[in-house]
Image: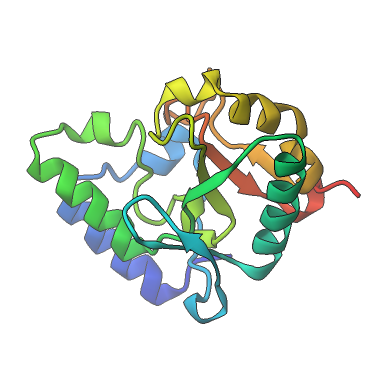
Length: 184
């Protein structure tokens, strides 16, 4: 999903405002992501904060199939976050800056606006009843072990594994649906 001129201009302004370096994407090797059409998103339910979690229809269908397969194996998967607009991404960074966090540390786990897979409506941050926090300890759960073994069958790939080269830290909870990777 390429950026429109309007989005490109809005992102340049946001990046200056937030202090994101002009070479951010090239240094990290991150792809630009346009926003999904919010009118077409499918709700997966609400998260632990009561916010609606929504993704594009194809990702929602794959999520439902994957969630059912996990349940059949005794694993409960929960969607904590899905589509996130550019504006919401900027809001998250502003909030973290206001609490005194340094921008380099924030950008270690939160992509700059325009570079988050959440904009596409294909990314889901996944938790389970045994571990509801979005942190590295999620990798110790049965849910993560199940995802690690089976998620690709449904088109979901772990976006930020250990040692990835994007400058984004290890995120065992962040899975992105890619249609071409789904097996039948």
